Length: 229
Image (cartoon, rainbow, N blue to C red):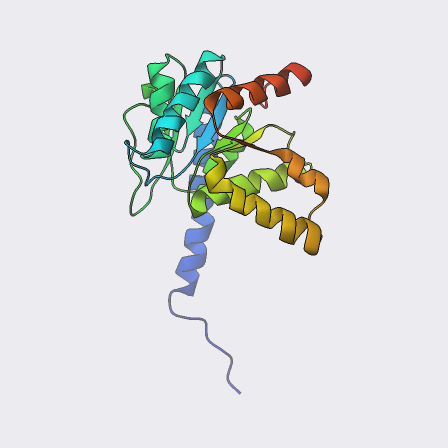
């Protein structure tokens, strides 16, 4: 029996993986340096495919405007759709507007409403997601796809497991999110008991920008507000 040979190019792949550490470190250092200066912010998530005339684009714009009026900045993924609406609302409201852009083969490009000194580009999703969690005082989640769900459930998991301090997670758009919440309650909580009843206390479901700011203000009025960083 002959010894199994590694596929051609195996050594080169391993070498490239090792050198990638330095690129990853560079993204962390650049992100930490820029984000540590932005002040208290709230992250807004949602679909990159949402058009400017869509009701959720307009709602995201109003939400962001209300958030900066309450004294917070806004962080988004930096791209089009709901992300653009969030940055637009913050920009038009005169508040801090941060964009954490990710290089993708489709959909993603910087929107024009990000502050010039607060636009960051990332190659790695996990570095980008860390910046969202570390430098946000709350997550506001509008209708979106798999990426939005990924960011939502990761934040819930980190809070649930005590890896980060609790902050408000607010789902905006009851007609969009109620089916998911009903399934979580009926299937995960009640039938299979894969989550605890109190886990749902981490999530707020609302329809308006006023409700978003009310939840943020109430949480931090009662929690002796401090920055997450």
